[in-house]
Amino acid sequence: MLRPLPALGVGLAFQAPLTSLFDAAASVVDYAEVVPDIFWTDRGPGATPRYIDDDDGIARMRALHARMPLVPHSIGLSIGSAAQFDRDHVAQVAHWRERLDFPWHSDHLAFHLAEEHGRRVNAGITLPLARDRESLDLLVPRVREVMRRVPRPFLLENNTYYFDIDDSEMDEATFLNALCNESGCGLVLDLHNLHTNAVNHGFDPMAMLQALDLSHVGEIHVAGGMELDGYWLDAHSGAVPDAVWSLLDWTLPRCRNIGGVTFEVFGSWVEHVGLARIREDLQRLRDTWARDQPASLRQRDVRGIAA
Image 1 (cartoon, rainbow, N blue to C red):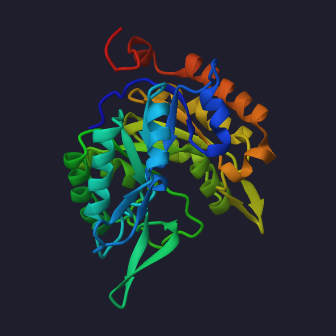
Image 2: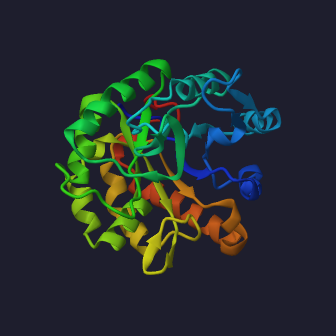
């Protein structure tokens, strides 16, 4: 069961073009969410050493960590891969905790690695899992192992899916509730992912939120996207849409264990969106956090200790 996380506030996913927002004296950012995988080179299973660290990048993260908390949001675990569980990746995240301690960490409830004729294949995109008992039996012991080896709360993010798997045994909320209850992990509830799926598959996102046990939510993600060839894409390419703001306004007050809300925008889109607009959305998130965070959070300082 997820316990209350340190109430950090509003975070921003780290991208180099956003550096000025992190370094500003009057920063609108309370913490940085970092993809740790971009600060090492993975030479693949069997290589010695497997991981080569980017020393300059790690030095930059140490300097940022001196100013604000860092929260790792990894992309490399592929926890839902049927053929393998990458324990080397877990060990690398554990090594990061020793160097740059963090209040929690997360990855994606999906898979991108598979095997074909005995060779590892990277799909290059997060793929959905079947929402069934077999998937839970695969995931639960892996989640528990991550939590044992990295002694910090571990969250998994609900995935964007552009195709669904037919004849699922469970709807998404039921599956997420079961995973959290059985494994002890929490959720990164990505509201833009939910919005994307709702637009593309024609369902009501509020029905999913109302069925989800929001006590499992440790972090919320918001982002923007774009339409392409009749699909809404989770492209992290714009400001937060009005529909996502509405979902956030309803959801945030009901997440009693949450530690923060994170805005994601890819570096390649920063110039298009503009730093001024990104700053506006961050300030609106701070206002929303101050207004709508659960009352229990107002009694906790950033270390998660009663004030």
